[in-house]
Length: 216
Image (cartoon, rainbow, N blue to C red; front, side, top):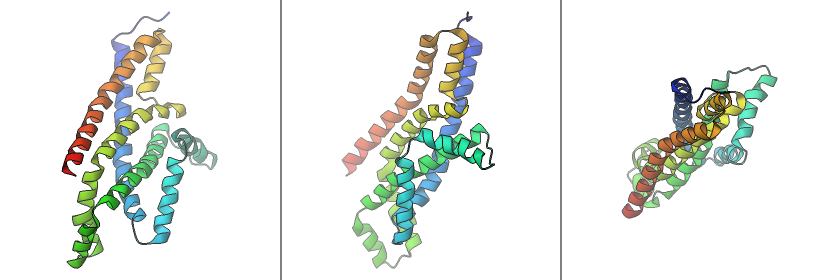
C-alpha cells in the first residue's frame, strides 16, 4: 500500500513542473525564432522558397505531435543518432512550434495594410528596412493574441513528452500515483497546476484580442 501524498511526492511533482516549464520556454523561444524565419520566407516573393515553407508547415500541422516525437527520438536512433530524451523532445517541440508560429505570423504579416508597405516602398526603403521597421512591428502586434493562445496549447502539449520517457509534470503525476495509489488526488493536483499555468495566459490572450478588436 502507498503511504499517502506528502512532501516528497509534492517535491517530485515540482521537479516535473520545472521540466514542463523549461521545455515550454525552449520550444517557444526556439520555435519563435525559427517561426519568424519561416513566416518571412513564406511571405517572400521567391515562389520556390514560399512553396517549400508551405510544405514544411503542412507537414508539422498535418501530422500528430506524438508521431513527430517518435520520429525524432526513435527514428534518429535507427540511423545511429541517439539523443537523450530531453534533447529529443526539445527538438520535436521546437520544430512543431516553428511551424505553428510561422503560420500565425505569416497571417499577421499579410494582415498588415498594404498601404503601409507601399508607403515604405515610396520612401525607397530597402526590403530589410521595410520588414524590420514597418511590417514586423505591426504584424507581431496583430499576432499577439494567437501567439499567447498557442503558448497555452504548447504547455498542455508537453504532457506528450512522457511517451519517450521524459519526466515532465504529467509523467511525474503518473509515477506518484503508481507509488501511493491515489490517482484522483494526484491528478487533481496535477490538473490544478496546469490550470494555474494556463488560465492567466488564456485571460491575457483574451484581453489582447479584445484590445486589438477595439484598436481595429
